[in-house]
Length: 141
Image 1 (cartoon, helix red, strand yellow):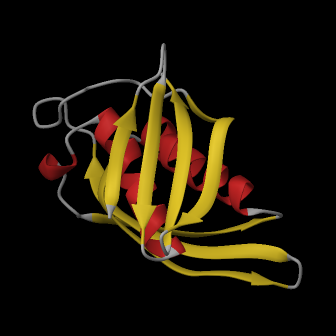
Image 2 (image 1 turned 135 degrees about the vertical axis):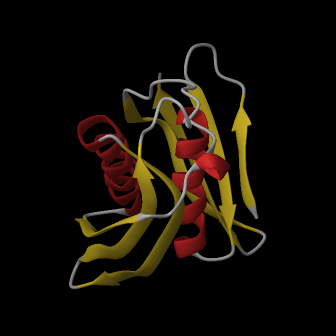
Image 3 (image 1 turned 45 degrees about the vertical axis):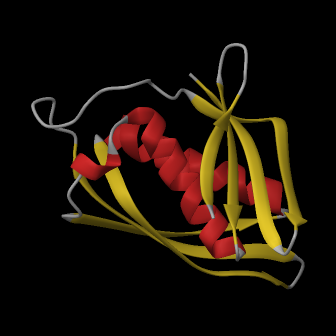
């Protein structure tokens, strides 16, 4: 289980594996943060909770990663711990609850790697392989 970065000509192509959808979404978040900074240098002082509703899993993945990018860009927050719960399909929609733990960006403490502008639907895939959930997505940097 975990994530890895795949070859891409200009952006960052991520492949995530998890034994559950929740775990796969947590790894997707951690991979996104790994592109932005070193998550090991982020302390979990601040908690941000939210929920996502979408028509399909691809939209849910998009909205989840987008929420992380917005929190980094608009609120100046970095994260190192992600807790995703209750990914389920209820009444013709997917729902998810999540909590992100981290702290405000400090240039003296946190490495600035790449600026992630957006997540895209380009090359996005979600499927099950050998009993594990696989998520693939591209981050526009």
